Length: 245
Image: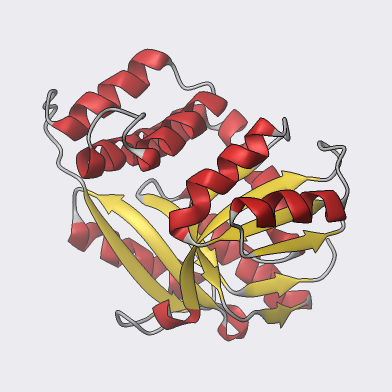
């Protein structure tokens, strides 16, 4: 998400995690599996895994679940289903771009369900590459203003000195943008300053946004919520912006 809606979306997701911990743990576990498969089972040497473990712990996922997911990723534990990472692209109401990262053990089933969700909410699933060019992979560190006693100027100096590219400000949040390679150093600098991080990830950040309001905004939010709730969906990125609540 972008702009004001990103902070609202994160707060909503946290509420969903609390209400549906089983489904949330499944998604968090799959991310741990993918990270361990990609870079090994040691979080000290695998930054993606460290982020995945941190996110799982923040959601109060039991330690034994996390360790089991790491072992699945490294191949030390085989429990049947084999998941693959795939990306789908499409358009939502108002022509907004939607990029979805998934993990599935049945590509055909997932494709059918994605088409159904898009069509039901006024969008359509597109071909590979139709919207990916609108996004760039960036590090994204989100901080709530209420949770951090730091001014915009002080935060700007801190993160730029650590290698950040930009600081985006909203009434209730700061978003630090970095190149993927600089993300670990910037995140470490933010944490050393004892700042509270709401979310930290290497994400697909939109290069331009589309303003939505009224019925189109409601329909788009419905689409994103339906995608978020699908068990195979790990991340949803879009280029919409909604001014105000």
